[in-house]
Length: 336
Image 1: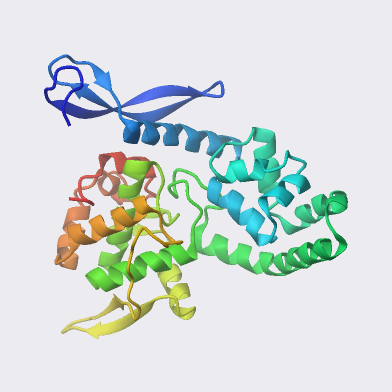
Image 2: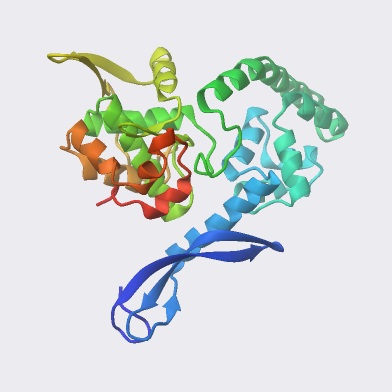
């Protein structure tokens, strides 16, 4: 990139700045370009999106406002259209669709939407709004609520056991943990890199943190810790075992001279293309491919050594501490 002011060189910079959103100020890693010759600062669309994403994520997290994927998921669990969901919540027609498109609700509305995830609470709202439904449609939604109620207790306990973080925050990259997405990431790396467990842990870390570095959100929604051999997904053993028991991923034991290693493989051909992909966005696909390419041909030992150069590991390894996604902005490897 050349400077729009002098046509000369530019440098990519970042610094902590406090920016205001809805009368609240949040410290973010503000990214900008600086003209080497004139010292003038400027941004482009990509940097603007990254800076804004950081502010919006912190605002949602602070005030308990659900993120876009949560908002979609809440509606879908009851099988309602965006129009009907708006009516049940007492909002204007199609307002819910705007929230699914990225518009941030008010604090009161955001908390109402998140509360609606609880089937018992949503049932109360449905009863109040019964007049907007035809009788057969009302009964259908009621059946959905009853099914959600039966599954909720088991799913909630399992979810907390595997992932701990209930809502998007800085520890999970402002993403809800998603079993299907995690399995998809593992299948892709199993196909392209054929990693053992230790290496897979690093590939997932780099994919999540590299995406956060560029776009302000992770991919999987997993939290990470700094263990002896580098960053690992929190509770990764239980997560992998769950996926194996559900038949969502494949693993085989490989015997070496002194030990047995678990290697991941894929029985399906994973083609990550932008068109028709309902699991990953275009930006996520680009990062997954870049991380795979960056580490292809590297041994597990080499990948561990590279991960030990990251401040995310160095600053947390002594206490096996959780790694906040803010460390993504200091990431050294991942896409090169």
